Length: 230
Ligand SMILES: [Zn+2]
Image 1 (cartoon, rainbow, N blue to C red):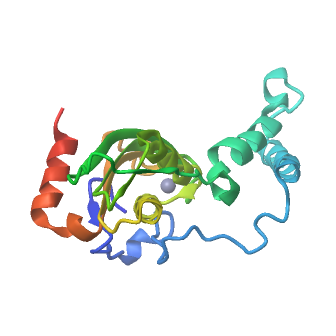
Image 2 (tube, rainbow, N blue to C red; image 1 turned 180 degrees about the vertical axis):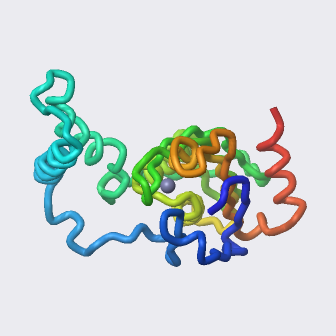
């Protein structure tokens, strides 16, 4: 999507023809497109194979892999992909959220704002980073605030498009908390926009997911006002 545009899941963006190709194309499902055999290889095997392919990319670019500084890069990148920045592809890394009773019968909106996340654009494999803001109404259960952070990090650690990341976080909060009243807003910087292409370093992209009560204009405004307050 274009910088400075805000989209919500209820009003999907229309893409013009000229937005296809080099730019970002939204896919229809909110699930990350994965093959059925995605985890037939274990992590060590994936690291070994990616290392070999990344070495080849560096070779083709003409880099001297005998240089001290470059020697370890293929393995370093492979480990970083599998164990860190794309670890959220593997369901075994999905955070287990322990639910607690909502003892205080708190029935207002709960907001966790300014959750810093680092992800990767799936079209260029360069960073997307920014802040996620998550809100929900409890239906009798609550989770630790750090769990909301972990859910955001888990879905960030995938090749992503920002719209899908936003919806995945919203749906997971709904699933975990058995609530249908969830709001997610993400403000992000796309390095593929900032460092290449149009080279706009100041633009940000906003996306939102609203379900249940968050479709109510007053509730939505309360959430957005809180996010925007210092
Ligand atoms: Zn990109």
